[in-house]
Image 1 (spheres, rainbow, N blue to C red):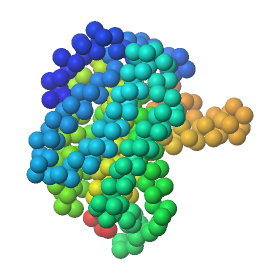
Image 2: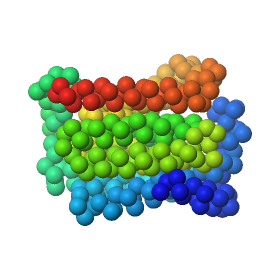
Image 3: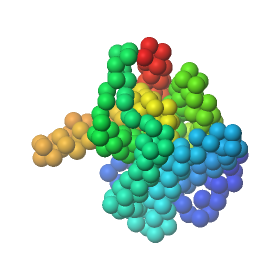
Image 4: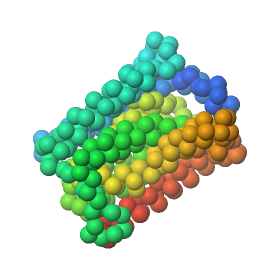
Length: 308
C-alpha cells in the first residue's frame, strides 16, 4: 500500500507545494534538497492503519497501540502542516508539541496501568529472574521513555532513508520478539510496519523523492515504544530503539556541554549522523552503518529475551 501510494501522494504533495525547507545551519549538501516533497509519512500511516484495521476484530489489542502511534503521527502532521502551509519555521511551539505528547502518552499509560494491570517491573538485562521495581517512579520513567524515544526518532529522520531503514530493522526485531513471547498482535503490527517501511523506502531511499516529515518519524517513535509496553517488556526499547536513543543522547550531551563550556562542542554536529556527513561519509554509507547498529541492538534484544 505504501509503495502504491507513491505515484498518487508525491505529485499531490508537490502540487500543493508541501516542500522541505533545509536549515541554514545544517550540512550545506542538504540545501539542494530544498523543495523535495515532505509529509510523506501519511503514506506510512495510511498503509499501517488500513492493514491493521483488517485484523482489529480478531486482535483488539491492536487498537491501543494504534491510538498512541497515530496520536503521535497526528502531532507530527500538525507540526509539518504549520511549518509548510502557515510558513512558521518552528511549526508547533515547543509548549504545544509537549502538551500533545504528554496527552497521548498519558492516555496510553492510563490504559497500560489500569486496564492491563501492567506494573512496569523491568527485567534487568542479562540478569535472569531479577526485576527492577520502580513503584510510583515507573510513571515518570514511562513518560520519559515514550516521549524521549519519539523525539529521538524525530532526530534520526535527518538523511534520505535513515529513519525508515532503522525502523525496518527494529520492526523485524519486534516481529521475532512477539513470536517468541506469544504476542501475536505485536508480531502483526511489527510485520505491517516493516512492510510499510519497505514500500516507503522505494521513494525515500537516496536520492529521496519524498521525505516522511515529523508525521512519519513521530509515528515510528510511538510504535517502537508502544510495542514494548504492550508486551510488558518496556526495557526492550533500550535494544530495539538503540539508534533513536543514541541520536537523541548526542543532541542532549552536545547542548549540555555547549552551555557548560560557553560555546565548545564535543561533536562536529548533532544529531550524530550529521557528524559522519562532515567527515565525508555518503548518506548511503551512513544509512547502512546505522542499520547495522540497529541490527546489533535487535540481536542483543533477542538474546536477552532468550536468556531472561
